[in-house]
Image 1: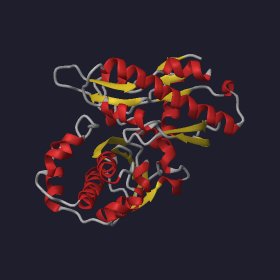
Image 2: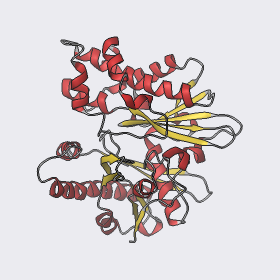
Image 3: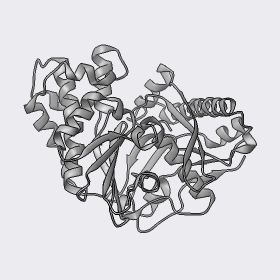
Length: 361
């Protein structure tokens, strides 16, 4: 899994032999600065972008292969022992349900190359079928969250804070609702890198040194997306550098750390409001993704949700950084079994669909 935050690639070796997901091994790899910059640049139109996108996809498949080989070496397993690789790819465009019927989603990847490099069957392109069926193509992880985190007889929520933030509401009667809340780490990381040179705000320490600028927060949260009811999804197509720059005009001369504090507050506020509105009375919010490591963000979530236990998924047996990779392993398994991977009430699709294209070894 390489998410919208572009902070690297996470890989897990997932064991489903007892019908549950057990992460046997975990490996990660960073993205070379030039590849990260190119993937970020490809989120907006540019010169010669088809050629550049193809080369970036090849390079990304190379990083995926590196992680796969590290997992095999660490586990002592051969490639033949692995049924399949679930490889999501890197989202660079996401425009589902455009009003003129031309909705689409695009993840850069080269699954054929990955299959060649590893000798393992690859399942990829998970989102397109859901979009073709009228869905948002996201979020796809709620079905997996239900499998591993649901509490029988109790409602609970799972919040994934990657580049964007998405919420899964696991109802006490077995229902599942899932949707994107808004930006997760994307804007925070963008601002942190610009002003400190660091890829992200470790532990949220820089944000903690600033103060929330209420006028800026009000302008940011006035974005129409936040008021749209689910199902809904978003990405860098909306929450990008230019979007932020236009709104910073309301706080001329603001200190950089105060803007960082405000961006952290925006993520916490947007996610907490979604829990309040749609959380079905949940008393537990399990957080995964890189945002679970941001202590300031976790504290603010708890402040906004005083009656909810805010914890990292580590407490439930699956480390926060491994959840999404494990989810796409599960989705690959669903595809190989010919079973649906989406939840129509989460994505808005016309029905359940088998997701993913299979590239045999």
